[in-house]
Length: 81
Image (cartoon, rainbow, N blue to C red; front, top):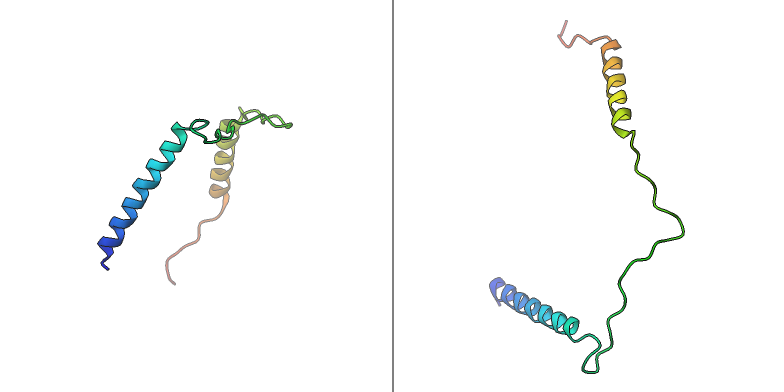
């Protein structure tokens, strides 16, 4: 059996699977099929954290500190002696 035959079989299987899943979704709760479970989300007991509004300033300060530290480090002479 050639690889192209296997690929074609796989593609046909995916088409059948997709069609079956679509049919199940459309017939949910009808024709003797059970209704699909509730997939909605609920808020947890712990509230979501608030956004950190100072991130930009902190990153800019860290970059300035890094630049200053690099400027203070003596440059190594990479030339051979």
